[in-house]
Image 1 (cartoon, one colour):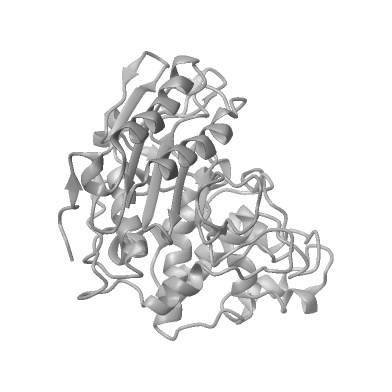
Image 2: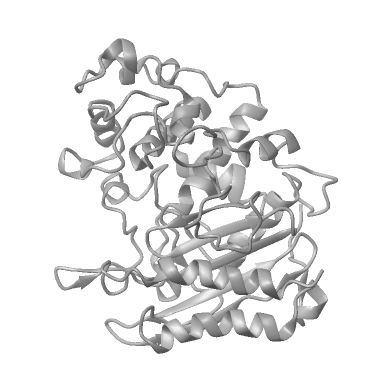
Length: 382
């Protein structure tokens, strides 16, 4: 295990052109100057050389302007899926506790027993862990489950009764509901609440000191607020309504973290599961499972999906941009967060914004991400 990251002060020491990295940062500053986002924290690195994080703009516009800082905690939204939920399933694979093509009903009998519509219970028994990880289960993308109940158990039950939209394996349809179910699979398999498993199995071994569900009041001053709803700004509680209805802990959303927290996770991924960043010594995951997770598991379908990750492939509108390699993989979050890897270049890029502040009508981050990634890739020299 390691307690510090291998930060370097000059872009050249990490294999980047200084002027090129300045241009990448200017892309962010231009979006802030146009008030398309309040602010951001960017962190770019490689396995053994990481540029120190840079903070831009404000972490809050409302109720008053607050300057941003590198230790700002962001609501990571759907990065929860690839930093918490999918990795905990990878760990179950490593431990021999499940197979990808195990039926979900093997762990959650109530899933097959619940007949919410078509297909019937027999078809539900064919839905697998792989289907949930790759968003090919047939479940809808999102529904307001919090309107059907409150608390973990009631919302999981609501997912189990949700009608399917298509037969499992037919196509990719990004589904937050599938990851709510994976959170329950993890709870059942580990015998402990999801947030406890995440803390003990991921955050503590990786020294992700800020990473948490349901941050305490002591962290509130460092948290970037999100949306204003009915006159009140959401601040320090998860933005996603279903995760909020589950008490702030879900396989779908709920993670709060800093850029450095995510860099610790990213370095481990580039090291293919090793904790020390050099592929040797202590490991969090096997090299086999980290490699398998980044592989395209949906090659004949409408999107390329790994075991949690989005795989860039030949997608022309990827958040990775144009210059990251076809082997790149990553994920984004609705609140404006993103984490992308280019294993060919030994590169990761973290960009955290609170683009739903003060309203979710702002979609500027969708353009910002690929522009920033293009500039970062262009700045690489070795």
